[in-house]
Length: 249
Ligand code: G
Ligand code: G
Ligand code: MN
Ligand code: NA
Image (cartoon, rainbow, N blue to C red):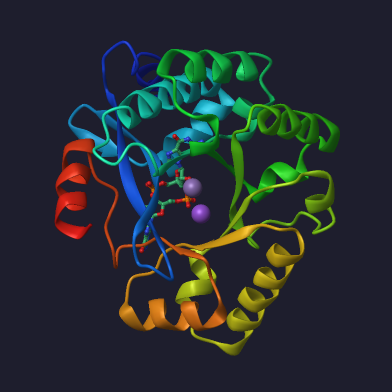
């Protein structure tokens, strides 16, 4: 209850910030995109989005918070030292995607920041597929009509049907870190199958949660396109991202 009250005022109190985590091309090992991850500093403590996003969803605060993140991240992207060819990936929650203000917010941010739509990726979790199929499909269509790309996050962890991929075209599939970090044959089978499916649908794959060189080499052998994880960098503030880039380009 109290947390909810504090969340309601977080934007006004300047309590949110956005951190960025690099995503690397498996072949070239070069930076290709950056994922924006929201941080909430509440009374000196950092509260994980895994905790407050569900709260924001339940209390109807998500469209406003999501709009803040999208706008903030796109403004930051105009300051990147590498701004012309690196993409920005922003998480979009279910209630945010389905909110009637969403497309209008997206149009406003595209216009005011002048970011090329093809450089903006929206990450939606696979669980959106469990929602109203027609509503989700039509929003994805609206997003893609603007040239913005779609990533399916946490792929393989939900309980949606694979056939949903047909009605909801996406550009990237993010392989959940639970598969990457499991070293059993079953996880490999699932990852191989995911890459086959992605290939059939013309999507690229991104492996999340790569922490070791062994994991990186293994996932490359399986044929993943892009890699994200602590092996390369943790999510960090914009200023650190600039330093990281200069040291790693
Ligand atoms: O960054 P971290 O591992 O703490 O993120 C935890 C979860 O919160 C992840 O599933 C991530 O996708 C989600 N998350 C982080 N930032 C945002 C955001 O801006 N919007 C939404 N909807 N989810 C986010
Ligand atoms: O669900 P989503 O992919 O949006 O979640 C992103 C979250 O995953 C971020 O909060 C980030 O902190 C976390 N993350 C990114 N790379 C790694 C990693 O290599 N290991 C672990 N344990 N978490 C990671
Ligand atoms: Mn994500
Ligand atoms: Na994920």
